[in-house]
Length: 285
Figure 1 (tube, rainbow, N blue to C red):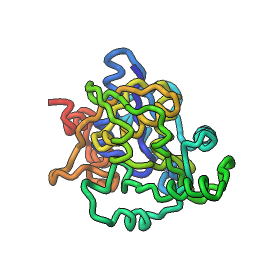
Figure 2 (tube, rainbow, N blue to C red):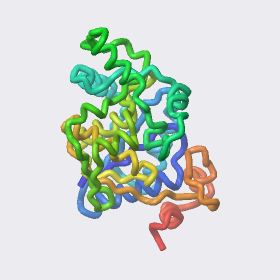
Figure 3 (cartoon, one colour):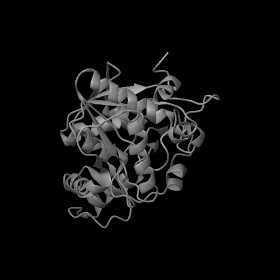
Figure 4 (cartoon, helix red, strand yellow):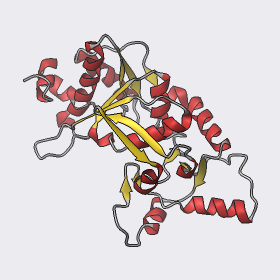
């Protein structure tokens, strides 16, 4: 078994991060497996070296050890770029110039269901329609990917498999291509600011690190169908997924990095022990 903890260095680790890291660490160690650490720092505008240093310090203080070198996503941009270029050549992605306002306007007509999916507003396919019109009526070729001044979206119509399957908390889940088109829409795999997207980079790196079991919060459960679809597209193995309950404050609100009062560093400064942290997240009675 190989598990991983993959925080972003955009703020202090809080109790929710500790819970996820401890679960992944203990799960692997219980069966003699490996626990890996990955720093997901593809957003250069929000990441800070000080926060990354704090991650290492907090995890070590919690008594968590990781195997092998730390993988930093910022070191792997050429890998993501290569995959994106290959997907472009194979006709799986298209340029999207729509702004959030454009998408909201396109979704303003009354309809059943929600306009929001695990990747945000469900994209209505505006630029995909324009792409087809250019191909069919203007005979414009897209053999060469243009400069990255807009996002790249995955065209779900090009997904070869009609059914995407994965394991979530020990239960087999199946979603169809139609489910993805309705509930997710053509999602972003390349951004003009960071080059790659969270969805693409996490799938590529889980495979590169040989991760067999992904332990993460329930807020990412819906995104699993996106990751499983990309794994099928890229011919990568699909790990087992384990989504745990979120740690919430007294008002029932899930913790965020801005909640410094729940930061591990704050509890440490107040004299808490690693055992106290385990007790706070319910891992010790």
